[in-house]
Length: 420
Image 1: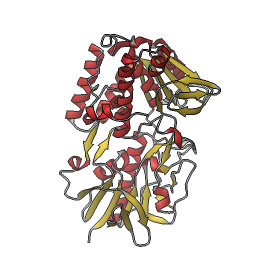
Image 2 (image 1 turned 180 degrees about the vertical axis):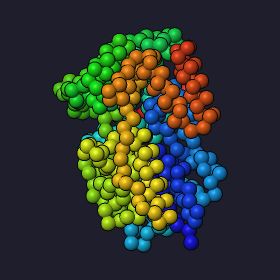
Image 3 (image 1 turned 135 degrees about the vertical axis):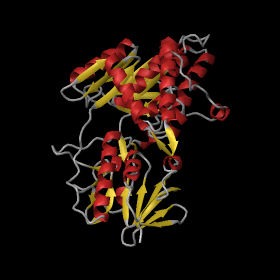
Image 4 (image 1 turned 60 degrees about the vertical axis):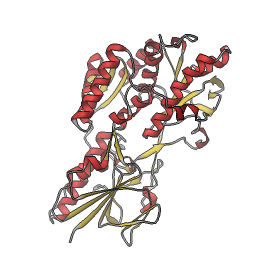
C-alpha cells in the first residue's frame, strides 16, 4: 500500500522536499493556490521593471513532469482534519494523507494597521510585483501630464517602508530607474528630480548585517540620491502619502517592506503559535502530539542551536525541505531517525545598485563590485533550469550595459484600472 504524502505549498521548502523525497511505494501530492513556483529573492526586480514574470516563475507541473509519483493540484486549503487525516480544499474537495507537510509561506504584515495595505502594497507574489510595477510606471506617466508643481512632486516621491534587504534593493533600483533608465524618455518632467525615501523604524538599515556593511549600504544609497530615514516609524499611510512621526510626506507611490505574517496553517492543526503566527515545531519539525504533520519554511518557528529564530529566507526553507525528506525516508525504511534539524547559515546578501552589494558571511564581509558579482552568480545558480539562468543573465547584462530595463510594459487593462 502506498504511503501518501501531501505537501501544501510549492515554495522553496515544499519544492525541495518533493525533489528529495524519492522512495518506493510513495505518492506525493503538492497543493498550491498558484500553478507556479516563484523565485522570491528576485521578485523585487519584477516590480522594478528589470525582469519579466516568466524569468522568475515556473509551472510546478513542469518541474515534476518526469516524476510519475508526484501529483500537482491547484487549490486553496481551508482546513485540516487531523483525526481523519484529511486536507480540505475550497470548493469541497478533500485529500487524504498519511504524512502532511505544511509549507504555506507568509504574507506581508502591517502590525495591526491592515487599512494601510491598499495604499502600501507588499511584495510576496507575482500579483504584488505587477501591482507595484504598474504604480511605479504610472507615477511617471501621470507626472508627465501634471502641471501643478506640488501634485507633480507627490507623484515623483516614492516611499519604501522597511529597510531590510528587500527595502534596500527596491530603493536602489527605483533610484536607477529615475536617474538612468528613464532620463531621456520624458519631455515635461526631469526624472532625476524624483525623491526616493527609505524609512526604517530601527536605528539602522539592514539590521541583520554587520554595522559596517549597513553604513556602507546607507552611503551607497545616498550617493544614488536615496533619502534614508532611520529611528522613526511610519505613523500613518493614506492615498496622499505617509507620516513619519509628526511629519507628513506627500507620496503617491508607497511600498511596504517592513514585516511578514505566517499563513493560517498553524491554526488548521492546532499548533502553538508565535507572535508572527508561525507554528512552533519540535526539533524534528513536527507539530507537538502530531508526528505525522511537519511544518517548514516561513510557516514554522524554528530555533537554532544558539536559541535564535531561523530566518525566513530561501536557504533555510530548502534546508528544512531536505531534512524532512530524510526523516520521512527513514520512517518508511524503518531506520533510525536523523538527528534534530540543525540550521546552517550561509550568510546574508543584499544588492544596492549597479556594481554595489553587501555580503555578510560572519567573519568574512564583502562589499562593492566583488560582492555584487557574487550576489548575481549565487542567484543565477539557484534559478530553476538553464533557460531561466540564461534569460536572467541576459536581462542583467542588458540592464548593466545599456541602462535600460526590459520589462516596462503597462497593459491597456492595467492602465485603465482605477488606482488608489
